[in-house]
Image (cartoon, rainbow, N blue to C red):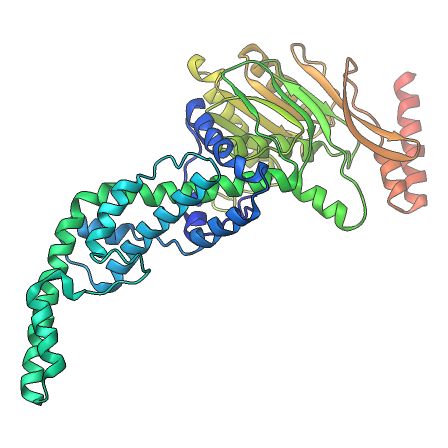
Length: 443
C-alpha cells in the first residue's frame, strides 16, 4: 500500500517509511484531519492545480543537513544556497496554488518566506537560481566593473582573487542573515512533504475505493465490505471478482471457521492491514470501518520458522502467541491490544491442538482482549463469538461470513479437493475412510 501511494517526491516516500506508527488516537485523528484538509483538491476535480502541485513537489529535496549547517554557523556554497532558495520559492508557489483552491495553506507563512527570499534574491526577481549579485556589496560591484575593463592578465588575476574573497564574505553574511529563519525552513520542508503525502493518501482512497475509518477509544471494531487490495486486483486481472466481507469484534474473542481455501487467512490479513493503515493515517479497504485505537497489535500468521534460533514452526508460533498472553497479564495493557492468530496449533495433533485453542480463547475472553482467531478445530470454549465462511453454495465458494452457534468446524476439504481436480481415486478412498471412522465412533 505504501509503494502504491502516488507520491510526487522521492523524499516523501523516505519520510513516510521513517514515520512511526501512531502511539495514540490523537495522532491518528491528526493524520486523517490532514488528509481531509487536502482532499478538497480531489473533490473539486481541480486537475490543473493538482498537476501544478505535483510539479512543485517533484522538485523537493531533503536539504535538512544544509539547514542544520547554516544554523550551526557554517557557511555553505552556492549550490546549497540555491537549494534553500528553491525550497522557499516552492513554498511560496504551493501557498498560492492552495489559496487559489480555497484551501488554507497551514504551516506556510508566505510573509516570512519573502523575508528569507529577499536575502537570497536582493533584486526580487523570483528566479529559480542563485548568484552572488553585484548589489550585495559596493566593493563587489567595483571589483566586477574593474574586471570587465581589465586587459592585463596579472591585474585580472589579482582582481579575480579579490572577487573570490569578497564573495566568501558575502556568503558568510547571507548565512548569518538566514540563520534566524532555519527553524521556519525546517518546518516548511516537513509541511510540504506532509502535504504531498496527504494528497497522495487522498488519491489512493479515491482510486482504490478506500475509506477513512472512524477511530474510537474503545468499543466494537466493525468492518463493512472489507477487502484485500492486492488479492482483489489479482482477481480482477483474470476477470474474477473479490467477495468483500463484514466482520466485527470487541473484547469478546471471535473464532472464525470455514472450509479450506475459504479465505479465513485473507480475512485475518485484511483486519491486520486495516489496523496498520489506520496507524499510518491511510485509507482502509472497506466501505465502512470503525476501529478502536489499540497501541499493541499481535499478528501471528503463516508457517514461519525462527531460523536464527532453530525453532520449528510450531515452537516459533507458540512463542509468538505466548508474547501476547504475557502482555495481556498486565491489566492496564490487556484492553489496549489486539491479537490476530491464524490457525494456532494447526501443526500438532487435533486433540492437543483443540485444547490449546480453547485455552487460548478462554484466556483472552477472561482478560477482555480484542481477539480474532481462525481455526479448523471444533471449538467449545465459552465467552467467544463464532463466525463461519458460508462455503459451497450452488457449486461455488461463497466467501461471506455469518455468525453461528455451531462449534463444529465444517467438513468441506474433500469437496474443495474435488473442485481442484485432485485424483478422484484419492478422494474416494478418503471418503470411505471417513465413513468407516464415523461408523466406529457411532458404535
